[in-house]
Structures are given as structure tokens and as C-alpha cells.
Image (cartoon, rainbow, N blue to C red; front, top):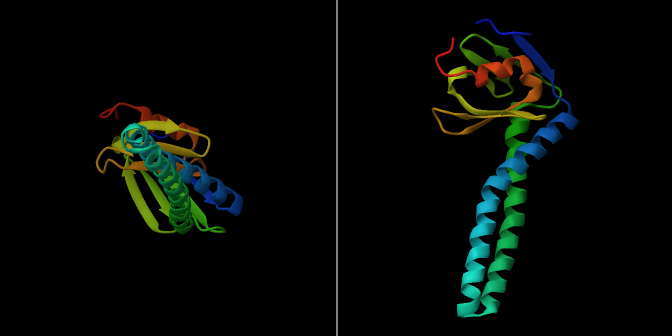
Length: 161
């Protein structure tokens, strides 16, 4: 099956685009990490409050808020560092669709990701996200490097060639 549409796309990275992908990546990552933190600390505060005194509960809630703020700043800084290295402002990065893989050419080098490794795909306005079946990590590919015609590759059943 030959790719439909373009087989190679290029993207000249602008500061505005980089800022948007950093924001979305940071929010998604932060939500994943911080949500469990807040729920855990909130549950602990409610359980501890009646038995140990509400002062301890208030301290736990305050601690959770401090951790939320710190985790947001840390997550955003980490996302900016990683994405700015991969997609330097002013550079041209590219992606290619072959029958077997998505080939990304970024500021950090080239990487081939087999289409069969993409699971649980979701095409959003800023990223195409999917879980890598081998590493179990989430992949986020900017939409500028993932045309709509390529979405069929990550949605087809494994073994469909």
C-alpha cells in the first residue's frame, strides 16, 4: 500500500508554532502526572482530617498545591528544552511516510518508527499522539509533520500491509 498524499513533508519551525506545541505537550504531560498527585493528596487530606485534625489536612492540601505549581513549571521547562532541541526555531525539519515506517528528520537526528508500533492513535489539531507498542511510551508528532492522509497508517490493523 503506497502512502496517499505527500510522501514527504517539510516544516520551517516558527517561534509561535514551537510555543504552541510546548504548551500542549506540557499540559498533557502535567495532567497525567499532576492529576494522580492531586487526587492522592486530596484523598489523604480527607481521610486524615477527621482522625488527625484539620490542621494536618490543610497542610496536605497546601503541599499538594505547591507540588502542582512546581510540577507545572518543571514539566513546561522540560517540554520546552526537549521540543526546542528537536524542532529548533528557524530550522527545517521533515517527515517521510514509507510503506513500513514514519521517518522523522529533526534537530536531534533521524528516527524511524514502524507504523505497526503505533497503537491508540489520536489525531488532534497540534499533535498526532499514539502509544509505542514496543517502548510503551507515548509518541507526539507535530501535525505539521503528519498530514491527514497519513493518519490511516496508524489506524490500520497490525498486519494490514
